[in-house]
Length: 164
Image 1 (tube, rainbow, N blue to C red):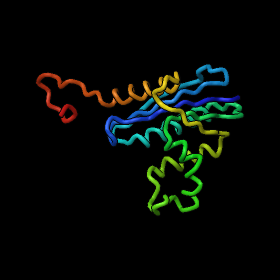
Image 2: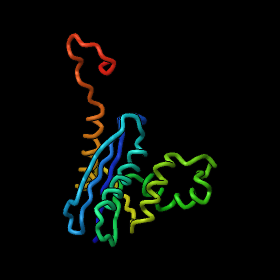
Image 3: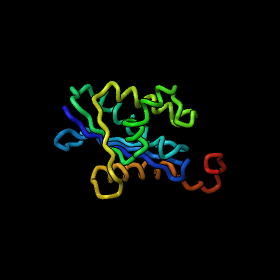
Image 4: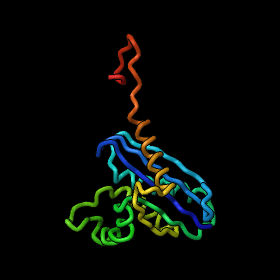
């Protein structure tokens, strides 16, 4: 089977509360699955990477007979990282061109392992230009961020560290 994965990640502030989302479709465009989530203190790039990792883990866990997966991402960081930079990083002991440790190395290592085990190609798509599944992932990412950012009103007469 052939699959398309659409992903997005983002933050409110960078760093700040962040969200990620993915949608997996089959060759005919039928949605196989989708998910979203987030972290309270993170960066845009970490969320972009985590979206792809979560999507690949999701599809691998389904035990489909996979012929090909195309990952559609609006993150040049993810697309270029996987198609241009990662081999050099690995050869250089996970150091960048400035001889400094690669940022988000923990996630790059996870993504590299998943991509090695699956037949994946990478496609960068421009964001906010009306591509329906990219727009939906963006919306899901914002929903995940809003959920993390929501702080319930302090109940009258109650003192709690949570409500600050």
